[in-house]
Length: 140
Image 1 (cartoon, one colour):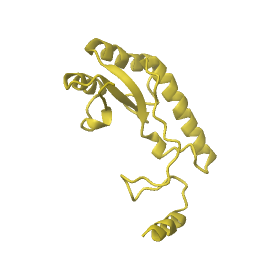
Image 2: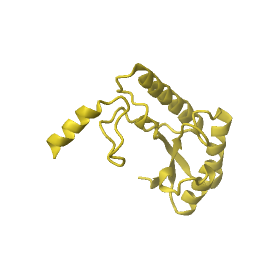
Image 3: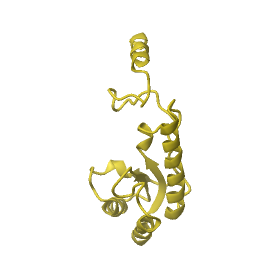
Image 4: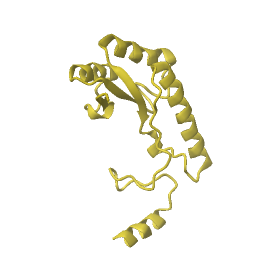
């Protein structure tokens, strides 16, 4: 068993490279990186930009244990909207491609959600808000 940490555990805005170094310094053996919509480690990143993180992890002696993303909260594989589903499929493909570059064999995929507990006012895109309100009334 290895002790790892997700990059979301670090302060928002901290650079990926800094998180990798700090995770190692804190005694973690692995780190789960995150694919974002834009910016650092994003859908817009090139393979060579992603490879930089693998090289840095090797240099400091920490494993990139997996690749997650929060993009599935907006792009659900189970959406009723075909465009949203297609975007979600493209995100999965990008995660697989980048995981290969990073040398990890694990990605986190959230195939669908009904609601998001940590942001209760947000519902799944294209969800019928009235249906959700009715369900919540039944639960109460």
